[in-house]
Image 1 (cartoon, rainbow, N blue to C red):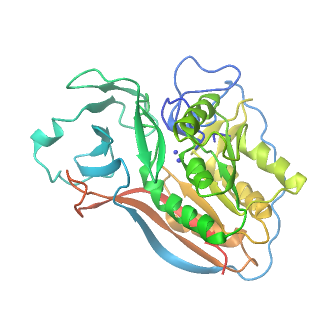
Image 2: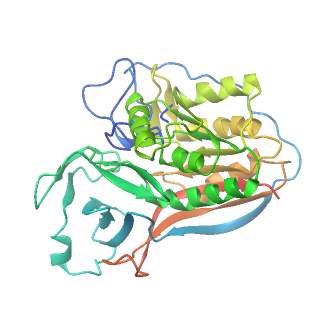
Length: 361
């Protein structure tokens, strides 16, 4: 289905999940982050499925709660937050966007916020559409950004997102280190890959990458980013397809991966109208992902956004899925730490999403 920053009407998220509709007959208006990654025709198609495998053995060891924190990297940092908003630095631009979890008062004076280059206005719901206001001067749709040494395009989208979810830096840094330490060929599967930043980080570290997103626009954006990152010759397969269909086929083919990243939306549609519902389909998705892990697997990473659930929900699901595989399941939250105007501060932590990660012993 939809194929993390999981989102608005951008040109390419299947880092799945926040851009306008795609598919053979795209809706006339953009689709929310939950649908962006895999929006498609209005009709629903039955999702491919198979029975869950009955797992035996002990569940993996656990480490909870784990807070993976990012204070920024490259061209990004969180300046301040409060009153249901966040003030962020993305390259040359200061941007204000809604943030429901910022319940406190801003630390910085009002005049600092008023100097923002772009402000998202409209629906404050995560999946709501809105528009951008540019207080100083009209800005172009895209602008260059860089994170972890990867150049890519930021983009002002109708769903508040800008083409990257910087809290994922924690996962990407972990992945980059593991690939470089492996000293062997590493295969990475990036499901719901969106604009491809994670895929490019993996490829730059030396991995062979398969990137899956149901959005044609997201794949197009990811290819633009590949060229901007000067990684045109990197071994990346860009797959525009429903994620569940793809992994079921990979399972039948016996293909295996060393690292699997999955960042599914709450709700989405595949290119042929396949419906994705997180709580209905996540158990099977993880079950299939386990079968796709190689004998020398490095890790399976799940991130979940905008859901009313405790991290324990996905933590226990991951442990049950990996029962008998040994290793460790660590789960908790991804947070971004306020860093002030200069990007060097250590302010409040803003929670962004839940995660669960299995790693071998």
